[in-house]
Image (cartoon, rainbow, N blue to C red; front, side):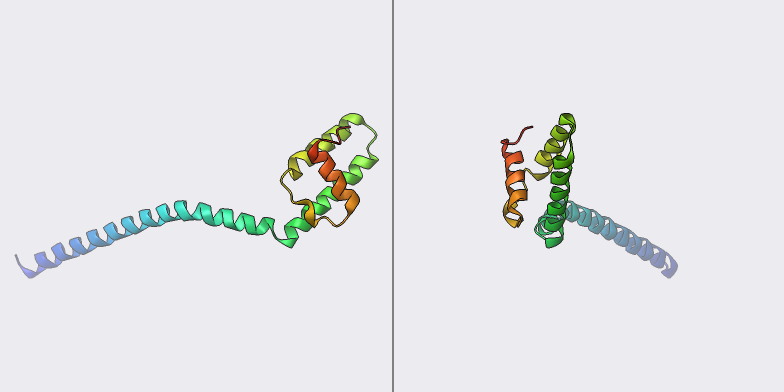
Length: 116
């Protein structure tokens, strides 16, 4: 084999190794992202749900629902508001709610004692 043929064969082998490594690392990277990415997303979601911005936003939403509920005269609309509150706040920690009326109302709605 002459030098040109050796260079071509060596280049082909090097190219094959590079492609193989890229394939392996890409698949490994995707596998790691699928495995650890979900865990990281869950951790990020948990951190966000414990943040002041999230909690204050939920309390503000709750306050708006409560005001709508108090102002609404239609019993069907009132039940719809209660249903939304029940679904949205069933797993919300009410210890962060400073307003005792609002806290008691949401606990009554989620607990089922307020059904009108």
